[in-house]
Image (cartoon, rainbow, N blue to C red):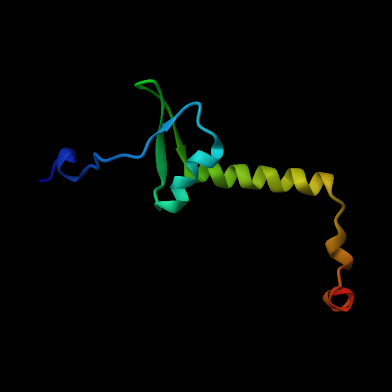
Length: 83
C-alpha cells in the first residue's frame, strides 16, 4: 500500500496573503486546482479554481445590474452595417 508521502507533491506554488488576485493567475497558467495562501510562514487559507469561478459569477452579476440588457433586441445584421 502506498503512503501519502510517496504520492504527494512537495514542489508547491504558494501565494502570500497580500498578493493580488492577478498573482493567483498561476492557477490557470500551471493548470493547478488550488494554492496555499501564507502569511509569513503560517498557512492562512487556500484559494481554488472554484473561488475564481465564484468571483467571475459575482462580477458578471454586478455588470448585469449596472448595464442595461441591450442583448434582447440585438440584431447582428444591424451591427455589421455600422462597421
